Image (cartoon, rainbow, N blue to C red; front, side, top):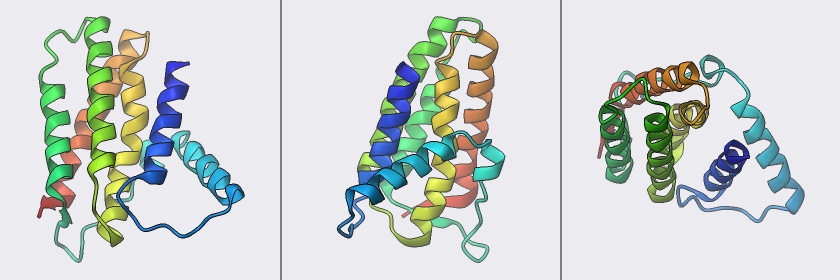
Length: 159
């Protein structure tokens, strides 16, 4: 149940995030968007992630996004007991908060914004894995998220 609530929260955050001007949408358009985003979560990370550089250069990221990613990396580095499922659960809760804050504070626009969402989208599923009741799945989510977070420095630079 918590996993579904997290998925719904993330989908809703992405709908209202990034301070993007929005056109008036019908209720049906909003529902279709939510369904499409929920379906994206079911795809493997490799399918969703096709990050590219900006003509060989890194994309500009607003400082709040860079700080949010740095905070997530710091949380990941703070995991001291990788054989303790409770530690993974605590980490997952803190990562969820930091992740939501990135969406809340995002002011990016254009293709840089689109590329950021390609980076962030797979993270939702990885955080859910970290909160799993299976230690092996927690560890797999942790390793996947650590690798995904490292991609930020490859593709983005703080403004």
